Image (cartoon, rainbow, N blue to C red; front, side, top):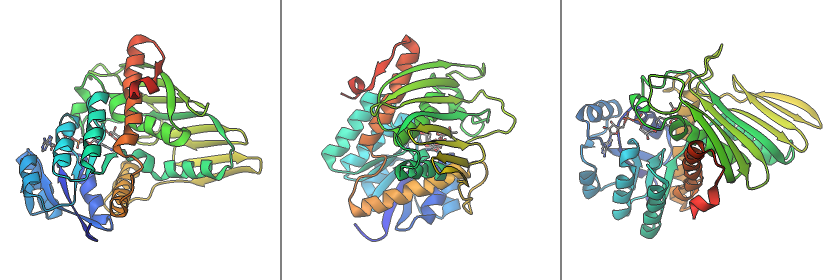
Length: 345
Ligand code: NAD
Ligand code: 89V
């Protein structure tokens, strides 16, 4: 591995622009080639970021080579084929969320990279947000003791469909696109999940999938939590894209509330802090929280790839988040509680 890693990015759409900005800030890696089957997107992103090597076909990109890793920023339909292409060429890969169309595909993708001996990370960036990292640090400090209950809440009325029109078209919507992040945060904060039960509904008649979901999680450590997500909530101050958190522990409690305000209560009293993300020079409100986490996860990948160690959101780790998505849809359809271990076998 050279000191300055060379990356190729596939998929120059809406979100990839954030990834390209963040790659410019990352220490130790540069994007040297890009690929998109849409010539207009290839030109816009290539010109904006001064990338000369441009491909309309991923197979041609891999055949030419000249890079140390690939960053797959396409939508889910192409994730499996592109991850498999990377593994076949011995190239480490980052893959955007949702990792795959099905849990069976996701398992196959993890297996093929394992067989090839190539690192695989899912771009699950929400756990890298500044406020989420701040919550993790409070738990690690022991201030509130052992957490026994939690709530991870994302309720918004923000128009996500204008930037990402495909979100209105899929049979599945909020759990697959946004709840996947919230479920990952619940796992990151309270640990792996043994069972879950979910209820969903569609409020917005102009979209195809569900835009509200309420999910009850039994964590393996005995804690119980609720993940509740909505894009149908009309609030006095729009909170997009903040995840709000409530945690009750044996010695105290934590509340992460709107406006990035964290309140921690312990036997010593209550401390209030501002855990706002920073506004990177290329970022814009209200997306800056997400944009900063894109930089953080890409720096993490670069550091870990150089060190030869596993990433926080490796493909194998993400199977445990992806299983929660599958289980939530199955539970909402059947009304049953789903066992997660059985899905992961
Ligand atoms: P998009 O449709 O705007 O962009 C996808 C691009 O990929 C398009 O330009 C398309 O032409 C290109 N593409 C698709 N298949 C290709 C292939 N086989 N070869 C080459 N190019 C191909 O989509 P988007 O909104 O940018 O979303 C991309 C992914 O990012 C999705 O999986 C989405 O869920 C995810 N996303 C993640 C976050 C986050 O915070 N992690 C936020 C938004 C979107
Ligand atoms: O993070 C995402 O995947 C985005 C959004 C925050 C809009 O849901 O699609």
